[in-house]
Image 1 (cartoon, rainbow, N blue to C red):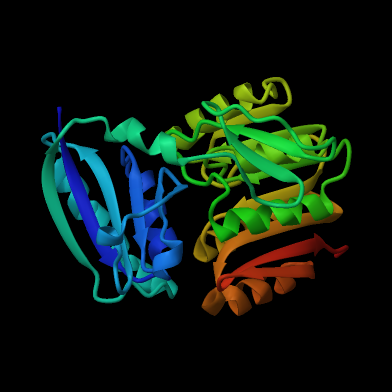
Image 2: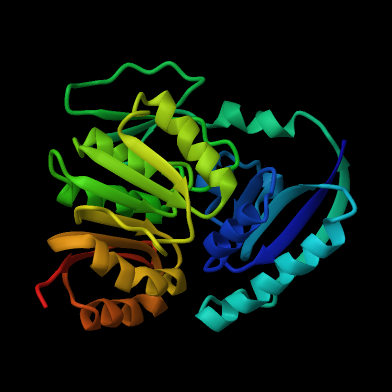
Amino acid sequence: MEWNELTIKTTNEAKEAVSNLLNEFGANGVVIEEALQPDSLYGFRFGELYELTDEKFKQTGVTIKAYFINDHQWEQLKSEILSQIDELDDYGIDTGAYSIDVQLVQESDWENEWKKYFKPFRVTDNFMIVPTWETYETEDEEELMILMDPGMAFGTGTHATTKLSLLALERVVNQDDVVIDVGSGSGILSIAARLLQAKHVYSYDLDQVAVNSTINNRDLNNFTETITVTQNDLLKDIHHEEKVDVIVANILAHIILQLIDDAHRLLKTNGHFIVSGIIEKEADNVEKRLLDSGFSIVETLTEENWFTFIARKNDK
């Protein structure tokens, strides 16, 4: 089988948004090569860290590679991808003077090659991310281990936005809480909520690849009965008999704005709404919309110019 290797060179700021778009368009793997100091080179493949050789080191910006099957739909798909990247500037995400290149490559072992670089790693004081092909023994009773087989879904703990979301969950999830995970990706936040003793988690994602990945990882962690996974467009037309305790959404800022009202509708009074994936320049806008919609900001977490808000639903 032949594959189209799509290479995009863009800004560090745009890497998360562009990578997410590529996954949403069905990329069979995404690799990010970042411009970092030579003693700390790394990249991402399927969302996972791996070491880069010196020859791959880029002096400026980010190089993103994604792989798509070479078929009659490719040209139309490529056009749609580039159109979506162009629109990111409208949402305040600076893609710079990005460039693209397409190379035809033969199928090889690249689909599984990345696995040897993905090792168990601690993402917070409590959470340890462990790939299914690695053997790992927990160090103490307080450690919470998340088994992951990321496949093609986005969000497996290595990026700041996922880490901040996990930290926020640690702060607000209580035993027997009911939690909603919007844009579940690989399912990491849903699994984390259950490990924090949530009674039940409802996971929603529009992308069928993400839905399948969440189901797979849910079952790997033995939460088949307590994490319900459904394909859905954000929280549109979602109704629960009882209000929920926590809603978490690790997605882009302009998408968060679209679900604030639905989150307020579904949350209990004093319930928590965790929003992550917000770049610094969008933080004030998201915060204002939350306040205007009946939330108060409990805490703001930041890392690498990314913001996460823990908001509380107020009485109206």
